[in-house]
Length: 277
Image (tube, rainbow, N blue to C red; front, side, top):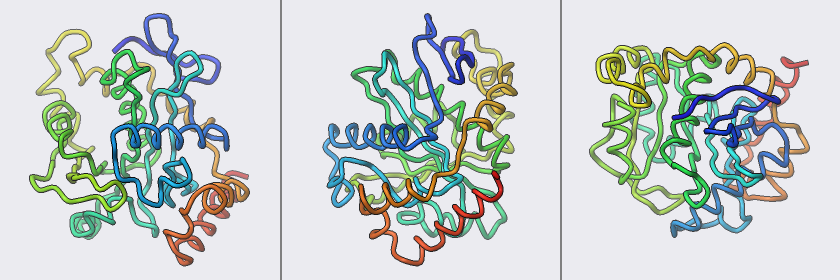
């Protein structure tokens, strides 16, 4: 992983700082991120169902006003994206597949967010792993410094499970897979305990050199304060017009969610807008 920096209100990295990551905080940037995930999933042959009709991968959880979506670009082309979804009365995306596991964690008092819609266009990315790690570092900053989470969860494609267990050191990578109703693919439940993550990373990676030292990557990051400040100043709650555009005009997100969840979403948006004003 090459060095990175914040410049022109963007997170830049690469040998020539020619890669950029922005917070998708406008209608056009959000749409670009949703289009990219759709394109990636379509290219992999996933059964997208109703979500595929609009050309956008957009769900009710993408539209939660506290959800943060990052968009990576190179030479003006969208190359990668990821969202982090906070737990709320809307639940998490994984509730549709692993409700039992999430209920156990909530009952234990865990504070959750979900890594959602991670996609990297391997035709553009010079290294899919490199870009993925930059996106994950930003997700970790949000979860620990902005959301005060105890755990990150994710439903990941079953064939990606070794990356989460052996590289990212997720505490739990389910041995059983279940079928995602949205993609038709087999996915597994994964969880990382953020309270104990540093200790595990120090043991596994602390003595490694260069880019292999993921303990340094996540926990000895001199840019952390600037990253937190950048994310705070860049994030903007989704507007009422954007909710109607993405939830109703451009996708089936509102229809699929149902009127109760849509009403809850609208309430969250008003509360977040009032808090920001």
